[in-house]
Image (cartoon, rainbow, N blue to C red):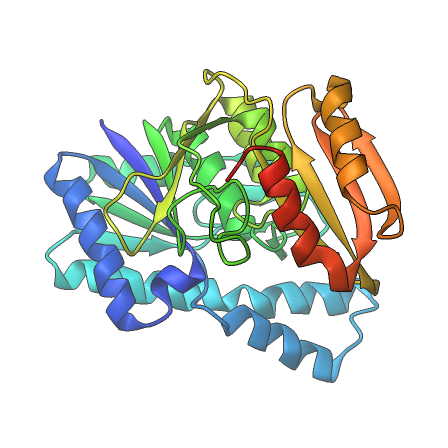
Length: 329
């Protein structure tokens, strides 16, 4: 059985018109002879609204509070899955939706940011044998051994897609977003940022830990563990995206990220990502020379990352400067 996984983020299914466009991409895979696992996020803005409502009522300072919170904020995915499955049925596709627990995703007891402990996808596998063409699975959620709904943390739909791909031996896992792939920097900040055609798991993990919001960090760690082939691409074009696997030649410098510190809004962190970058003494000297010492509050260096804590008001100028210095323009 040829099987592919397609994960659609919230901006890709923000309304029923966009759901129809996403469903058309699923239809193309069906026409190609594939069965499809669709992993679906909540529609854009829904989870944030549910989070806000919960905080209006509770400080979430007990285990029971947090369990109800997880139950509340996972409902957005349930709505999306049902609507998307209806959309597929309207296109003549035999589809059904699955909640995380129905899909067999068991997690630990940390219901707010849980880790996957076990995956039993036998019922989804059986549904394909019975003639279903698509399984639409709610992202972001699982169930604990105590039968409590749990969440996989913000961005957890990525993890859902990857662990299901591994368990069901999907040929590939396509992550659909509102951008065309992974870029050398955020293209909304740097208009000269370039799409990266190929990137390996370790580079993508470093990107995510440095603050890039393309994929959840632990989802890529699962992909590396199970050797799941990934592609990050746009829901709004037919262009190829960024391919992520273990076989690609590493980059000396792959890109730059920018992240803010929620506990201190006066500073930001800029990170340069590259393989074995800590041993590039020439680059480190050039970068440190180019950034005025008065703007550097702290430095954090590791094997694949050079990070600088800088004053918030200078962050855009510095990241643009570093993008050029690193020959990424």
